[in-house]
Image 1 (cartoon, helix red, strand yellow):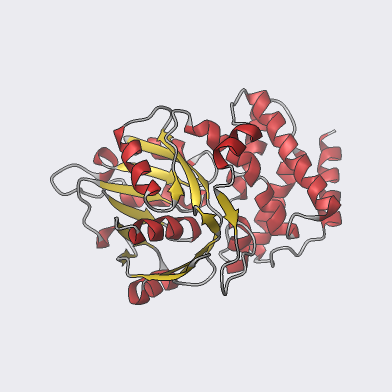
Image 2 (tube, rainbow, N blue to C red):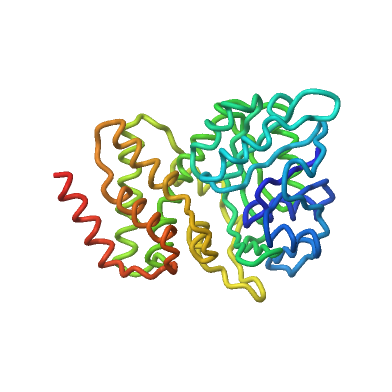
Amino acid sequence: MRYIIIGAGAVGGAIGGRLFAAGHEVVLVARGAHHAALRDGGLRLTVPDGSLTLPIPAVDRPEALELRPGDVLVMAVKTQDTNGVLESWAGRPVAGGGTACEELPLVCAQNAVENERLALRRFRHVYGMCVWLPATHLEPGKVAAFGSPLTGILHIGRYPSGTDRTAERISADLETSAFLAPVVPDVMRWKYAKLLANLANSLEAVCGPVDGDDLLGLYRRTVAEGRAVLDAAGIAYTGEEEEKRVRGDRIRLLEVEGTERGGGSSWQSLARGTGSIEADHLNGEITLLARLHGTAAPVNETLQRVANAFARERRAPGSMPVSELLDLIDRRARDRD
């Protein structure tokens, strides 16, 4: 199997780098300065054990690569970029006949829960992947991953449900590459639980590290609201105890030489000044479900709106005092009443 990593940022770069270092065939897909750095100098993957410079082939567009049977497309872009990826790759020919959307498996190695649904409109063989992989990508050509002894835990299964031989083969390759990759028949149940954890991404991006009584209290309020909305919608998600049993002590977050961990994926989007953020598909998922099922989500609705304003205005991550955010949330709650 050859792995085509579409979006070689923090998650895609760490997955592709670890697979390549373990002897698997990998192609990275990236854009702009990141692609140029990968093309000219390879991927520099820094982990707690040291730094690897990996000469992984890199392309910047689908037309630069001939697809072949046995390829696996791993989509690791932010959800706001998913439709563009699907449009670009679905109709690409595969050597021997057929197109990518007909012949090749597509793995959604992404946060949020909308990607698989979007993909299934175009691709016949779609797999969800619940990503727990602490990593950072802030400079072209460089990715840092902080987990040890495992780099991450990647639950995988068919979408909307089930397992098959392809999922098992992908899992086996990942488990030779410093990952735990359980094959599960209910991958979306894991992804909805991850969605709840990712509701704090916007909070961290807007106000900074989630510590101190005010921010921790707001974090708990954000997640509790998310759980209430999922319950109202009748959506199943894994519990904390089940997740702890899987993770155990398999991943410890360690320092990586020359790299500060910084924040999560939304914080990194603001730090890089990309102009976009994934809040519409994290907090916005809770907002949407609340509206569909006749309940309220003022905390997540406010976080969604403020995070989008930060991205649009290219404001520095962590620059809003928590007191200001709390005032906005309370105002939104009063307006609904």
